[in-house]
Image 1 (cartoon, one colour):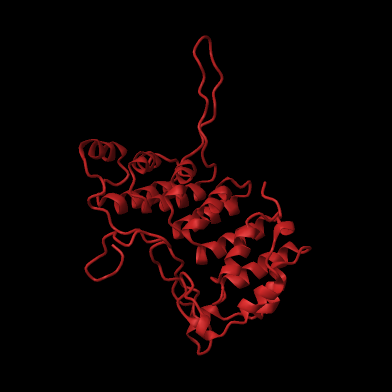
Image 2: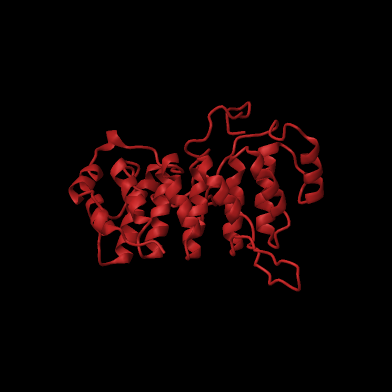
Length: 292
């Protein structure tokens, strides 16, 4: 289980607050942000920084980390370092909040840390790790995503002289499997195709549809949930990724509730879908300039 690494935390509160106090000219766009209203915070940066490094209150650390992650300054290097450090917190809510920070501001070099949390004992943390890997691109994540896109196969006991199955590691929660299968849609690599086609046989439709969407993105083909048709096509083609289009990570979006049409009431916290940080720029895009 991850451990709280406060003893190795080297950033001082002075440095954190210094970054939090940067003026508007230093603002960076937050991944998924749509408006300044979305970035507004009821807690000051100084208060949020104090909460995020509170050694005694896990709830405060989780809330402070989330407040920092959603701030206009949340992508500054000291805060990215904070999110990476908090992935080792003893509290799963803090680890999940840290992953949300990396989903908004993480970079490809952060992926090895994110991968480790795919094996977290807490389902919410594993879910956040899979979703974060949809927004940060690094081929180092592929093998771990393949494992977590499939159901585990339990070992069997030997009978007679026949050897038993050694089993196969996988992910027990279908919601995590679905998010991992979705994240695989950004990697045009042969090792990804067979696991995605196999995921079409998952017991849960959400996993089937996520795998199908990734296959469509990677290949430009659509054989629905028909595994045999997918395998037949794959066996016959020499260029499986010729019809590839750009992967776009899922983003939260909903229509306004009636009260949100009232002046000065904040709009829904809708995100703007985009390609992941570090995604290859040469991947084709539609004629209208949007991701393919």
